[in-house]
Image 1 (cartoon, helix red, strand yellow):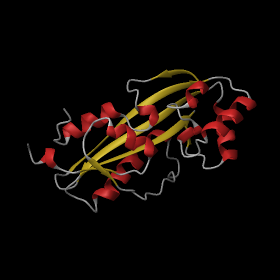
Image 2 (cartoon, helix red, strand yellow):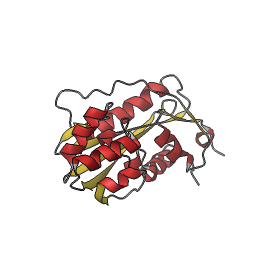
Image 3 (cartoon, rainbow, N blue to C red):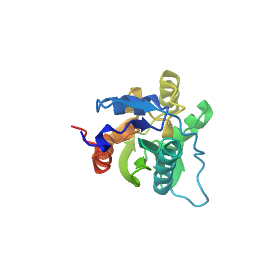
Image 4 (cartoon, rainbow, N blue to C red):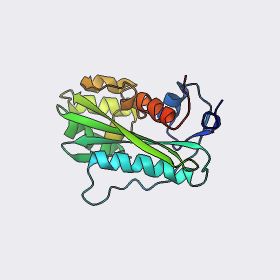
Length: 197
């Protein structure tokens, strides 16, 4: 076993969705919150925002654990170039879904892997194009009361009832929409020196 393959893995996120996804790789890891301010910079678009936050989260945790491989991830819903983040409240979630009904939204999901001890720091982005159904206000209200997805970018949880909001999903990594693109995560971990299989 090489030195890199023995490095501890840290997921720089307390998201239960990302934790569940990373568990699929059957690699031991710990979870540490990154406490990064997710506010967009002036004139920052959804894709650069997702990339910057994924890297910032990984770097924030890596600064305290320089020998570890740290995974950071972020997702931003992109509606015609406007970033839609986590709604936080029911009223904001209603407004987001009303704006997205009948529209194509790109969920920009970025992942970063950092190891300060080796100088490794790379990011990759998985863009997921989603076509929302032309939902009624009643359908939106029913969905939000059932799922309460207030901690999800764009108010949608495709792994649950949220799949009923959608007419089509177009992407090359089925895990990206849930919040951690595992195909790209595997690629980055292996580039950092860790053998996944």
